[in-house]
Each structure stands twice: as C-alpha cells, then as structure tokens.
Image: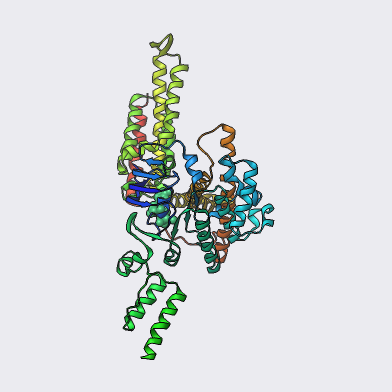
Length: 289
Length: 265
Ligand SMILES: Nc1ncnc2c1ncn2[C@@H]1O[C@H](COP(=O)(O)OP(=O)(O)O)[C@@H](O)[C@H]1O
Ligand SMILES: [Mg+2]
C-alpha cells in the first residue's frame, strides 16, 4: 500500500492550555514495498507520526492516505478495523502489551479480533513463532516467565500473525543487547523481503538506518528536516550535526581517512568488508609504486 | 479522550493565587465549603458568587478553561436543577409544561442548590488548578501535624499520597500506550455490546497491573538503596512559610463571613 502525507499537522490536547504541536506540515510519500527509516531526536515527533498510519491519531490538519484509506481532520474513518488489520505497529517496548496466559493465546489475539478462522489462526501462530525464531515448545508457556528478549519476540509475533501489508517498527531494538539488536534487525530485513512488506523503521541508530533502509527521513521538532537515500543523507555531516545527529561510523571513518590521506575514497553503500578490501587495494597500490 | 483528564489539572502560573501558601488555600476552601451552606438569601448567594468569581479572575487562568474543566459536572448541576423543578411543590404555579405544573418554589430552590453546587466545585477546582500536587501533599502533612501526638502516621500518609499523585500521570500514559497497542491489534474499546466492551478491558488491565507492580518494586528498592527510613529526623527541601499575602487573604475571607452574616435572611 502506498502511503502519503499531505501537509499533515498534529497537535496534542488541542484548545487547552496544554496544547502541544507534535507534527507540523509534514508531506512525503512512501511507495509500496519500500523500507523507510525515520530518524530524529527524542521528542521530534516520530511516534506521533506513525500513529497516523493506522488511525490511532487523526491529523489535526492535512491528509494522510494509506492505500485507499483517507484520514483527515474533519472525517472519521469508518473501517478503522480493516485499516488496522493491514497496518501492523510494533510499539516501543511491545512486551508491555502481553497479557494472555499462554504465548499461543497472545499471538492469536490479533487475528482473533480481526475475525480470522480458528484453523487459520493456528497455522499463523506457528508461522509467526517461527518467523521470530522462537522454539515451538514455547507456545504453551506463560509470556510472563520468558526473558525480556523472548517477550519482545512474542509481542512481535502477535503483530505478524495478523499478516499486515505495512509493518511499522517503533525503536524495536531499544534495550536489547548488541547481539539481540543485530538478530532482530536481520529478522525484520528477512521478513521485509519474504513477505513483500512495506516497512517503516523508527530508530535512533544511524547504523541501522544506513544498513537496512532504502530511504531515510530525518525529523526535527515535528518537521521533516531531510529525506533521501541513505547514501545521500548520511554524508551531509554539517546538516546532521545541526540537529545533533551523528554520521554513521563507516562514513565517519571514510571522512577521517580522506582528511589524513590524499585519496578520493567515497561512500557508495559498501559494507565494512568491502571497504576494507578497497582500502587494501589503495594501500597496496601505494606500496607497489 | 485526553481532554476528559484535564479537570483540575495544575496549570502553571505566577498569579497571586498560585503563590499563596497551599495551607492558606486549603483552609480557606475548606471554610468556604462550609459557609456555602449558610447562604439562604439572594444577596448572600450573590456575595458568594462574587467572591468565587474574583478568586477565579485572580488565578489569571482563562475563565473559559475553568468552565470547560467543569464539563463532567455540568450534567449533575443541571440534573439537580431539574430534579428540584419536578419534585418541589411550593409557592405559585409559574407555568405548565404540557399539563405538569412548575412551581415558583421549585425554580428558586433548584437555582439555589445548583448555584451552591457550582460554586463548591468551581472553588475546589481552583485549588488543584493553581497548586501542584506536591504542594498539596506538603500542606496536608503540615496541617495534620497535631495528629502526630496521637501516633497517627502523618508522614507516611503524606508519602503515600505524593507517590500516588506522582504516578497518576505515568499510569495514564501507560493506559494510553497500552490501549493504543491493543487497538492496533483489533480491540475496539469504543463500540460494541456491553459484554464485548467489558471483555476489551482485560487486555488493558493485565498489562497495567503488571507494570504497576513492577514500578512499585523498583521504587521501593531505589528508596531503600538511598537510605530512606521514614519521617524521623527528616528535613524538608521546601519549607512552607506564611507570607503577608496569606494574612491578607484570611482578612478578606473574614470580611466575607461577616458579609454573609449580614445578608442572610
Ligand atoms: N499523549 C501525548 N500528549 C501530549 N503530548 C505528547 C503526547 N505524546 C507525545 N507528546 C509530545 O509530542 C512530542 C513528540 O513526541 P513523540 O512523537 O513521542 O516523539 P519521538 O517518538 O520522536 O520521541 C513530544 O514533545 C512529546 O512530549
Ligand atoms: Mg518515540
């Protein structure tokens, strides 16, 4: 499903002394099937933004379009539930939403609400559990006796079991150990490819945005600050610095090399091993001369 | 949904009402609640109404906002008025709605009682609008000091209150967050039959309790780790002090009481 925002603003507690403008005049497009990273400081409005995508929030101005669904300030969408079955959101710390007695029941909760048949639910539960790489033996255990990382996987499985077309991830790796973070991101990458999802990743990590996304949007104080491919966005050191964001390490490294040695080394999306090889070629060249 | 939670929520400000000692505000409002019941004539009600409006003006909070904060109780106020219209059968018949007679006494009493109600709630909401929960707790602790003599755990009560107050916004946030997460999984909190709506609360309550217990445990641990042992010998960061303006307020309030005695029928 294509997603587009047209001059969208959102104000919390409108018409009270506590009015707070969280999003201001945001416009952008996300084509179906893309992997978009939304990056920005805490409080820049990322979580507010994504809550528009399944109608949890209604814009206070402008228009949000998700596939054929339209959300505007004036009109309430009638088939919200249908929209929500197509747009899955994994909230920050999703393990807080677990409540059932068993893992199986918790995963089945979403599909059950959306009217999926029992047989199909069982099939999906098993698939979702496999997708998040948890052993089948876990289905009958209580979610509350699992480790933090496992709980998070169960919660994510609960969203996947609904089989959404758009998957939104709000800082999905927050609070995990480095290994767990990498595993989880690799899992989302695989799902994105396998299921042909449109994936929107909200993250603090420039590294993840660089590696996984094919489009990056930077937010600052409720506004869109920059947008483009990771290669375009993350080399703009000065602009990023202005909103207190860092350049990913690999690009920092390339800048540093260029500063110290006369070379035209450039970032063009290479991985660390590829960069090492490139450097090897350059230095070997030097030695031979 | 958020708007409903604002009733009496603290609005930061620098007005004289904000800066009054919280004990002054509490005592004055407590007395006000009592004297409202002594009003029984037009002029006595007028006096009280003027006093309350003046208080509201001095807070420098938009009057429309104060009134809007009372939205949930408007229903009660109007209901009280109508109830008196219907059941009181004193005085002349003013007019008839279809065949049902409406008596002058009913209108008078209805108006008086709902006005009382309105004044009570408005003035009390001024307290919470202009006083932070911490100030209120400090004031209660200080006002209840005498009870320490009879071994009443004043400090512990105040601590319990401030912890509860501190966690109300957190709990509300948590509620909002979890209800959004469950709504994304297809729970419908707003429509459906009563039974379905009651069932929809379970996925909300279980996670809320889990996190509340976890928070309580963490807080207890953090307090112990920092050597908290209760009120004995503990000093205060914010000392409450009666200022000139507090004395002034008590003076004005005394005048109000005198005025009320004169205008009573
Ligand atoms: N429920 C809410 N009520 C009022 N203000 C809110 C609410 N949620 C978020 N905000 C405010 O909106 C701004 C954007 O918040 P958020 O979208 O959570 O940012 P991010 O996810 O980028 O950290 C913040 O200043 C935050 O304080
Ligand atoms: Mg956020």
